[in-house]
Image (tube, rainbow, N blue to C red; front, side, top):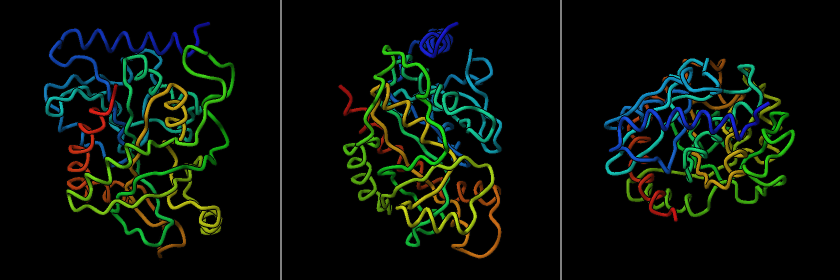
Length: 283
């Protein structure tokens, strides 16, 4: 039975075949994963190839609202970027291993740097709705790890370190870009829960007590897989709502999508500056 390495290689070969029809694009060395309400960045790419997830072998298909479910590879200026317009989550019925599988495919394709984005609830009271927050660390409370099971040494080591899950150098580049653009970009710790129900006020008090600034239902499986493969990672959360108990009223997904739309211009401006600088750091 083929393992993750063989499945990822088969999926990557289908993407390579699509790219052979567009030799001007070349091979992407940087990939972006777009979260809920943040898919508009893919529309900024020129000369793009768009590949639905359901046409890529073994690729998990997005079912969440606000996730287009396609891979878009195109040019951002002179830079070729692979953009995942939507992701999958454990709450959709996928395992953590499956949620991290697209990152495996990006690795086999040649991607060395990964930028992840997500919609998150704000726990830190200094954040406002629509804030962009650079992740400095995470707390995995999803009850699973994408590396569980036999390890394939061709993909990475059995026990990968997570001391710098989010690249310090990439964070420095993002902070520099934010200053130039006059964008507030605080750093914070992201707690990943399984979902799909939003957290209770008591759970938010617990998360705050253990050091979380943000809460969401994604990102961490992808980060673990990326670091396992030796990719450098940066992640940005959009605070689409304050977490339960932090503000009156019930939370809902429409609010998440609306907040993503409101922050679109700022978010796009930041990515356009940061991505070329990240690419320039690659060996």
